[in-house]
Image (tube, rainbow, N blue to C red; front, side, top):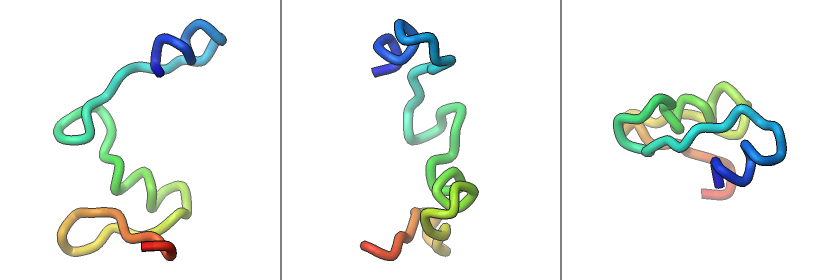
Length: 47
């Protein structure tokens, strides 16, 4: 996916969900899609 996005001109890089460059749970919160629970996992209205 990162290669596809890069080929379209986006600045994408592959990332592992555990210990990568981005904390996905916090990204969910920052984007306004949900909150980070006490278990450090994202909680969204759907789940």
